[in-house]
Length: 269
Image (cartoon, rainbow, N blue to C red; front, side, top):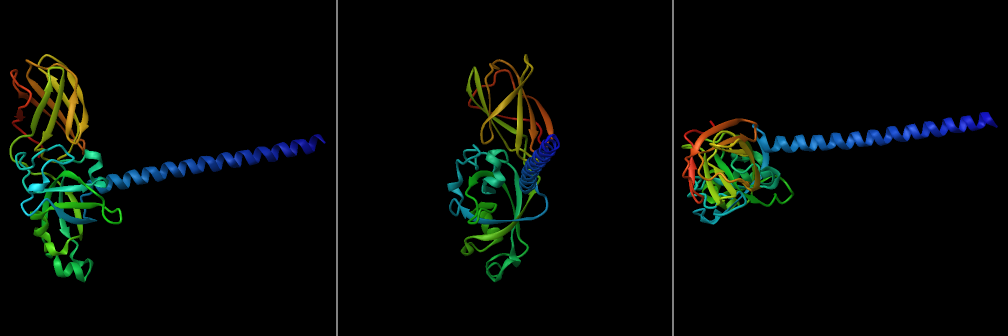
């Protein structure tokens, strides 16, 4: 009887061990799948080789209807972006963290007889992400271009086309710019005209009499902090999505005011 009980206990122990291994293996597979998904998403967002997406256009023939938008740039014309903008599906815009990123796009001319009829073979254009668009009809990455950018790569009669896209450095004129709004105890800063990788991932501010303060992202490319910096020169430390970091010293002098925009003497290149 004792031997039978010991044998039964060993069998139960082996079953429990097998179950534990199965649970651990399943958990590992889930984690690996999550890592792969995250890596694939990161690659899709930052890829520098051409990948597939779809494109349409919006905003009217003069792109006037593109003002406002998810990234907070308000009027893209007064901010210096003009018509060279695009609304991206969130699979690429990443809830606003990729606002300001620049992409080269071209029609996938060889995709079908339809694209060969309407698309302009070999033509590309470069745009900055300033707004959010819905995903493609089948959930794919999508670019909603301004009309002037769309007609650079395709006859507008095509409507919706397959495209290829890749991330490229942003080439900007002048320095990186900071627009300030708020009150003496709360500051909201819109960062734009960002060169290099284009999208701000982290922002810090320092007064001439303080240490660095981390700014939380409010929405789009608007960053906030609750600290009184009035009467102090302001410097900013900017971290881009690829990790590139630069300090812009004394961007605003000690008599800076909310409601004003301040331009640094340099930019990312």
